[in-house]
Image (tube, rainbow, N blue to C red; front, side, top):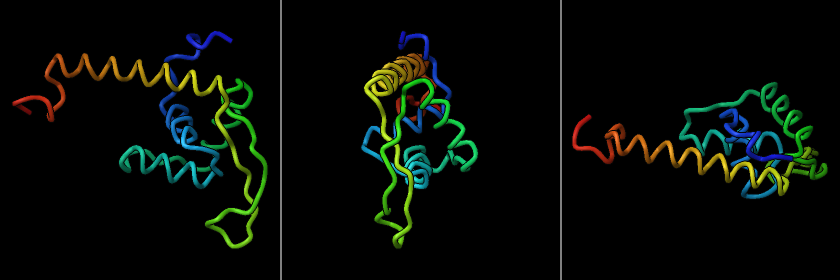
Amino acid sequence: MDTEALIPMNPRDYLILFALTDGERHGYGIVKDVERDSGGQVTIDPANLYRSIKRMRATGLVEDAGTRAAADAQDERRRYYRITALGRQVVRLEAGRLAALTAAARERDLLPERSGRR
């Protein structure tokens, strides 16, 4: 599959893949990681999460990693997901694209932490 054709990514999909780069996660774990990674600016409701996962499974970016008891739940079984090699390539490409946009924003003095004015 042509990874370039998958860029730019939907921001929600990017954040889900980004969360999975640290290892397998169940749905609730992904939701919490997305919230943490976005500094609380992005929350994903379960319906959108599982719709995105279904789409990314069909594209080959994510795969099932089995069902097992979650460490944060009392014997409750949860379905886990993992990023695929293709998913890792795509999330790297998207991170690079976002880094280039951030660099352009810095050059235009649009980021307060790098500029002398707001």
